[in-house]
Image 1 (cartoon, rainbow, N blue to C red):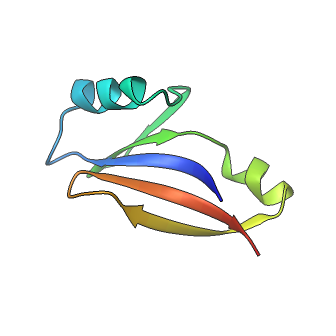
Image 2 (image 1 turned 180 degrees about the vertical axis):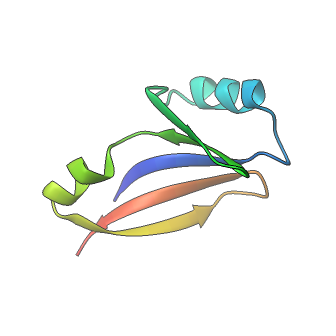
Length: 74
């Protein structure tokens, strides 16, 4: 599997704390998507993953604040 995005719940963490978390864990800060409820730090473009056979995406919750979007090959 590959980590496609790291997702933070906005009601539990502010942007700077989320950014610090991503940097401190050695992850990428290239593309950040913000929704009404989440900060999403894209690690790999989903289209890039799909072209390489990663067609199934699942969410893995690490805790109440952080989740990972994982891409799997079928």
